[in-house]
Length: 154
Image (cartoon, rainbow, N blue to C red; front, side):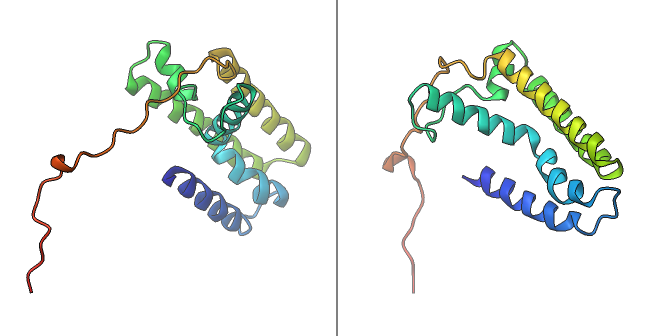
């Protein structure tokens, strides 16, 4: 999946990049910063895995119980869903940036507060309900739908 590849690459890059950041707490810069920057997709993926395993489904089987799907089910437009996700990601990025500047106990409490708020919001929307609809299977491409000449000339 291209989304997980980009997410993994971004986490590795941010982890390596954060070693160069001068901070009050180098551990927060190296470990917590990249995790918080991608906090929304990581939390959503973790809750999706828990939901699927609790329903005795494959953890790799797609469904419509993701955070964005649940927001859309609350009659939000696609634009509103996108802005809500952008806002949450921006809050997590701001908290990650602040964590580089504060002491250790403050860093952990701020991280825990943000994570708990996101999990509570996700569960409140129904993220762990086992009734999420399965995503429709991808439609196969019909040979007659492919147009073009694939012959090569020499």
